[in-house]
Image 1 (cartoon, rainbow, N blue to C red):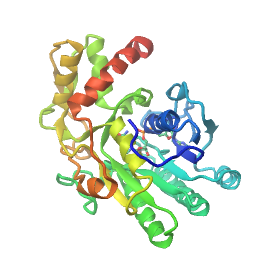
Image 2: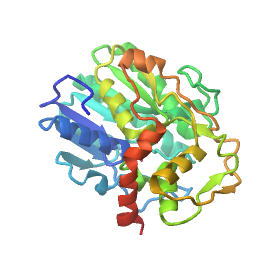
Image 3: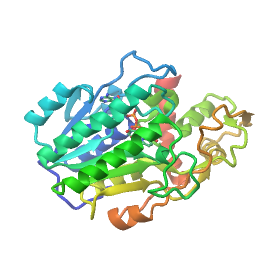
Length: 336
Ligand SMILES: NC(=O)c1ccc[n+]([C@@H]2O[C@H](COP(=O)([O-])OP(=O)(O)OC[C@H]3O[C@@H](n4cnc5c(N)ncnc54)[C@H](O)[C@@H]3O)[C@@H](O)[C@H]2O)c1
């Protein structure tokens, strides 16, 4: 579905992190709806480098871009020389900034701040120089375990990832006050699930992870009390919608992107079992993350509705129903 009447053909669009989950979904949105737009993907792609928690340092995967006909650049947003070259050689109309250490459990504070916050400043400078509107990924993790509904202005990050995203939001506000030639919109995504997340491995959503547990005949393993651990789960198609609407906002700012409804991890398993025709018994294990875990998230999306015109289209049941054939394909082609 197309979310804007603005003609973007012949525009140049940079998507950082475009080989990742959300960035690649954006790349295909523009390719499908604006075949004459020049879409440039910049991503570090994966190597064998890992963080101290054992997860990959960057999750970008070529398979997320199979069928993409735009330009692909492998590079690091921390590389100032590369950003300088991009600044000189291109003239971007829009920048979608998705590249980040997206792993909320990463412990490397130095790399997190450098990649998520400091490199963002360099990208903001390119946006200002090019007159490009900036749309960047903030996160529901800025709220930590703050009470629901989470509202912009009431942040309490519990980890360095959430902190880094909050610092991005502060930086963005400073830039929007100083530079009125462009709009800058931060989107605080809540828990995103959907196609092209699989290559995030263990950091992919529990929707695909439970789906594959069920398809392999294993009992789904949930944390104890999972009927009461609730999150605002949001289908990636609605994330694309919010990004597209944020290209021409009524005003710059930071906005929540969720459904506005809290659903439990138990509900994910129950819906998946219905969709997949399974009835495996659940196993409940102690939650090792107590103290640094979000137990109740529910985005207040009023300002997102008012300022961006955003209206989520997928409740959890609909998102999982739209996703389930892809979960099965991945299981056949990548898991088995
Ligand atoms: N998926 C979610 O639930 C969620 C929730 C809130 C916020 N976010 C944010 O949304 C954005 C996209 O997340 P995602 O889920 O698609 O994760 P992802 O890990 O799939 O995408 C991030 C991409 O950035 C790339 N990258 C990492 N470091 C880089 C660097 N130094 N230079 C260039 N590229 C680099 C990775 O290779 C990867 O392709 C991130 O900023 C993330 O923090 C995601």
